[in-house]
Amino acid sequence: MASKIERQVYSVNEIMIMLGIGRTKAYELVNANYFRTLKVGGQIVIPKRSFDLWLNGPIEEIFNIIDEEDSNENDVLSS
Image (cartoon, rainbow, N blue to C red; front, top):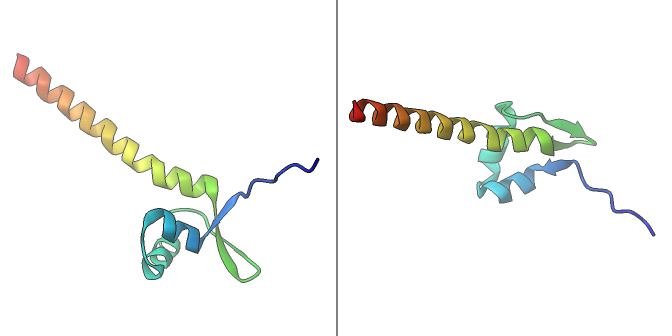
C-alpha cells in the first residue's frame, strides 16, 4: 500500500483562493517578503509553515494586545 505524501508548499493560485484576493494582490504579498518563497522550475511556491505562521501569527498578537488593554481598562474602572 502506497503512503500519501503531503505537499509542503502552496502555489500563488492557492494563496489567492485561500485569502480571497486577486493575482495582483497575491504577487504584492509574495514580493513584500511577508513569508518565504521559493522558485522551483520557474514557478513561485510558498512553504506552508512560513505562510501559516504569517497568516496566524500577527492576528493572535493583536488579540492578546486587545485583551490586555481591556483588562487594564477594567482595572481602572473598578478602582
